[in-house]
Length: 212
Image (cartoon, rainbow, N blue to C red; front, side):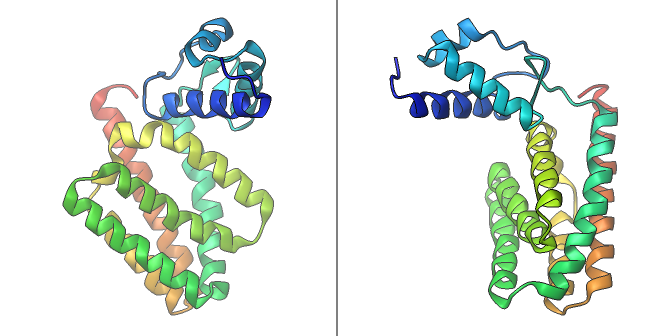
């Protein structure tokens, strides 16, 4: 059994979180402290602390893994559309040449990963693209809310394979060019349209499947 308190906390948190994100622990599943302690090899105290932290992140509610509904998805996207459009506008105004270059690299990584059929790598590149832009809003409260939304979003994004949506990388490139050219209004408008298309595509998948 792991003895170091901090190591045990970190292990429990990372184990539970990864099990949620990779689908091993399904949405709606109840987390039982005794069972998790045996499974991970730690005492119940770090399990409780890990659950508390995950509750703060919005991934657990009443000791059950958060299972977002289609309506939850709409609420998350609506928040993202407002905040990330603002962030894209700010990015066009403030982003340094170094960060703009990094933004460009995420697009190339997405294209390479698409050719190789690496959906998780596409997700990682997509997440980094949005993170770079979000950070440019320079508002810690907005950044925190968007980071929480991104984590919740990850619960269903890979399962629904939303990155199969046509032109998603092309849209990133359009946003990148608007930011590079310091066209604030266009950058914000393009981000809004991009996220609306993501939302509608995801809702369409849920509708076809009959459930999330």
